[in-house]
Image (cartoon, rainbow, N blue to C red):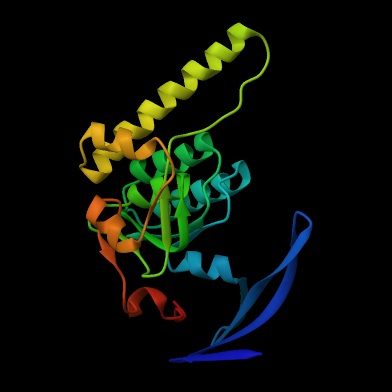
Length: 227
C-alpha cells in the first residue's frame, strides 16, 4: 500500500482489477482521509477533479464519448480555468477523434495538451489542437502524423463514394493542421502522404507543439490536495 502525505490529507492507494477486452489492467483506487471522513475515487475520477483528462489508448467511440463528457462537465464546473489533457494514444477512428476536437474548440476553457508515450495519427492531431502556447510533450515521447486511411467494399459506385469521402476528409485534416501548425498547405500535404515520425524537439520546430517539458510542472504533476 502506497501512502501520500499532502498537507492535512492522506491518500491511500490500492488496486482494482478491471477487464479490457481479453486483458486485465489495474486501476488504482484513491481513498482520501479528511476531517469530514473518507472518500474513495478511482484515479481517473480524482484527476478529473483537478481538471485533468486522460486520452489513453486507441480513439474509439467509447473513449471519445467519455472524453467529450469530461470536457463538457469541466466547462460547466468552471468556464475559465484551463483543462489539462494528457495524450498517450496510437490514434484511432477519425470521426470519433473529430468529436473530441470539435469539443475542445467549442468549450470556453483553454485545453492544454500534453504528450507522454506517444501521440500518433489522431492522437497527434488532438495534441496539435491544444490551446496556443499550451501544447507540450515530455522529452521521450513519439509523435507521428499521416493521411487518413480506410477500407471500401461493395459495388463500384459505393467504392467511389467512399473514396471521395476519404479524399474530402484528407483535405479537411490537412487544412486544420495548416491552421494549428502555421505551415503552408503544400508542406502539410507532402508530410501527410506517408507516416512522418517526430521527436518532441522536431514536433516543436514543425509547429505541432509549443514546448518540450524537460522538468516537472509541480502545479500539474503533484498529487492534488483535498478541496
